[in-house]
Length: 147
Image 1: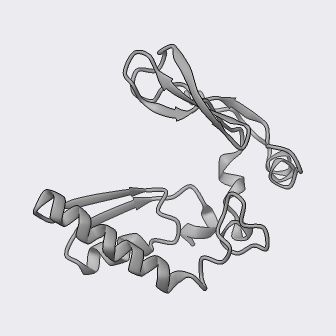
Image 2: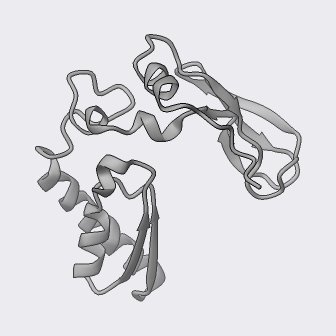
């Protein structure tokens, strides 16, 4: 049985377009699930915490309807706070940056291998890594980006 909260679509859309931060729920530690935390700092009203048990640093809360945040407006908007100004127009710059990152990874580890990109957006990093000879997989929460 899923422990994720159930959200009606209409409600999720309302959260995305709300002028304040969307409703959030506590984000448990992904490594040890119940570790006590201490706050390190704040970013845009969100607390960044460190788990006292395992040391994982993470945001203390997560949006209740996270998938609804990453619609087409997230990838091309007049207000890029929390998104991209225009992912499509910046694609060449992004791909160049990704090529540099792939080279840095290869220099550090001395080889190519398997690569998992969590939050892969439109997949540009995966495309560059595949071109460079990596075995790639990606996961993305945005239905828009996946399509």
